[in-house]
Amino acid sequence: MSSLSQARPLFAADEFDAQGVSDDARGDGLMRAECAAIRVAYLVGTLPVDLEAVPDAVEILIPSEDAIFEIAYSASAGSERRSLLLRGPQVSIIPGEQLDASYRPRRSDMLVIALDQAFYQAKVRRALPFETPNIVEHCTVVDPFIREIGNALRNEFRMRRTPNTVYLESWAGVLAIYVAATYGRRTSIEQSCVGLSLRKVERVIAFIQQHLADTVLVEHLAATVHMSVYHFTRMFKQTVGSSPHVYITAQRMEHAKRLLRNSDLPLVDVAALSGFQTQAHFTGVFRKCAGMTPREFRLNHQARYGELTAR
Image 1 (tube, rainbow, N blue to C red):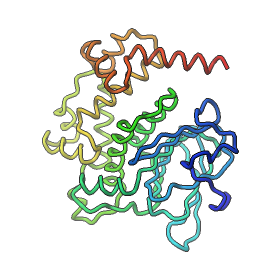
Image 2 (cartoon, one colour):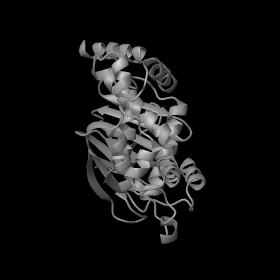
Image 3 (spheres, rainbow, N blue to C red):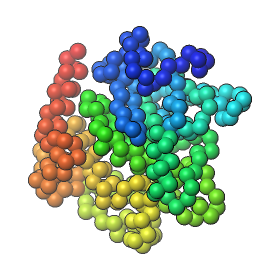
């Protein structure tokens, strides 16, 4: 990998013009969206440059299943640079204090999320009962929860819909709390106060995914991890950043979007398979979350897919 002095900042305006990389991501390219709390970039195709890690941010790299990225970083000042290959289903978390970090796309379809360090610290201090934990060092893991968030954001870009500020800030809060609770360094006393363990989170998420078409009560979720409803609800929100009801609704929306994109099912069937009792309720919730009706979403996708296949 080339030296960091040759790396390009990912979120700097017009950095990629010389490389012929456009902001519409129609083929090889780059799409970006940002607000004060979070910056998100979707990299597609071949980018013939090294990319500089975002300073003063907790950065999360989420490659698709067949993407390959080379990462180089120094764990501390003066230490030897290390390198590793990142590919799906792994995700990589680069701490805000990580020194001299850069990465190079080898085969690119990756989402890059940069949480503002100040936002991360403020959010964690308010939500968790301990001082803001540091991420010990660069971490590469298989994390289904982070990957689900990445897939939701990636789908927005693939639909050529730039995520708005409200949407971005909601995911920023979820990620900040989850990353701090799961990968942060804490004392033994603080660990006893943290939210759900990663294993319990995965068990709950798996239950939700398996029962999206059914009525999912908080009592059901609490029972899967052998907790009371009160303590489960409180600890779930501490860990994930939203209540079980809000999280389930978000998952129903993502499932409905997949059905709308990939099937010709009538809307009433999409509603039922996504856990909504009536099509009218489904349409109202979908419009509130996506800014359009399910029918409009499907037509937009079909128009976009037809445009791509015609090229």
